[in-house]
Image (cartoon, rainbow, N blue to C red):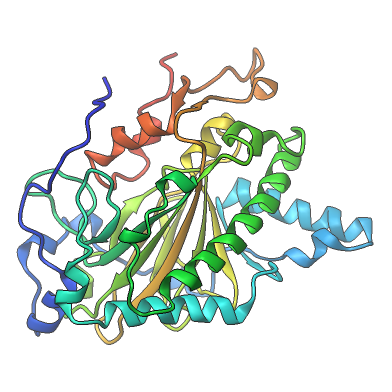
Amino acid sequence: MINNSSPQDWPEPIIRVQTLSQTCKDSIPQRYIKPLNDRPSTNSLFESTNIPIIDLGGLYSDDPNEKASTLKKISEACNEWGFFQVVNHGVSHDLMDLAKETWRQFFHLPMEVKQEYSNSPKTYEGYGSRLGVKKGAILDWSDYYYLHYLPLRLKDYNKWPSLPPSCREVFDEYGKELVKLCGRLMKVLSTNLGLEEDYLQSAFGGEDIGACIRVNYYPKCPQPELTLGLSSHSDPGGMTILLPDDEVNGLQVRKNDNWITVKPVRNAFIVNIGDQIQVLSNAIYRSVEHRVIVNSHKERVSLAFFYNPKSDIPIEPAKELVKPETPALYPAMTFDEYRLFIRTRGPCGKSQVESLKSPR
């Protein structure tokens, strides 16, 4: 049964991880120490392995073979990884750098300035330090800033930082460019699934979709081997475009039973499939577990742009993909219902979307 009410406040006082990073010189508090099985590990066998890197320039080539080859690479990446990096994506590199630098400046502002934007679990919008409202939960080593970008009625400039002064302007421009990029990728995914080019976009609500931004700040950690910056989870929304910190690795993607550390390419975005596209594609494309490790010497900043269905449209497997031999795996559920379902629990690997599967 889904609980349709959102909690009003956090179950315990919020402690900023950035503050802990400055005061805990040798060890971290017990609340951040993960169970043995969840602690980060690196497998030297996979040190040279990376998620696919795809040049989107091929989509606009006059050579049909090059276009077909690019579509095939994206299809294989969606099937085999659920993640890929894109270059030649059409977003200005200067804007990408400016976006990252602007948010780094925000996290370096005095704490009393940032605290004015403290969030609550009602909407998560603003400056936060935990995901999920389970009392006594083991916490992640990160702070974040979460903002609604679309629909326009949810866009509240009072929740956007007024410092640095360029923040609102930069993020309006950044959001506009990423909405365009997501629209192009949605057409590619629809085509690769054998659907009409605009199928996924229409299923999401056409022009009336949702989009939000979470800026992740991972402070230095004296015991990175004991904790995670973000626990293992799959993204609940449609598609995520991540602007990573390309100087400090942190994102890990689960491939079979191994964790692969992503090596970000300069000026590339990392794209991944969310739970809503898994449902719409009837699990042809699957969202994939990922997590973030932290670093003892360097902080990290990354920007996640979430491209989501309109919140009140029921999302269910595409009728064209449902056949006697491939019956619908999921019941219809709106994104609002799904979000409330997972917000009470916080990051839980792939268990959220898997628990929705229709019993057979």
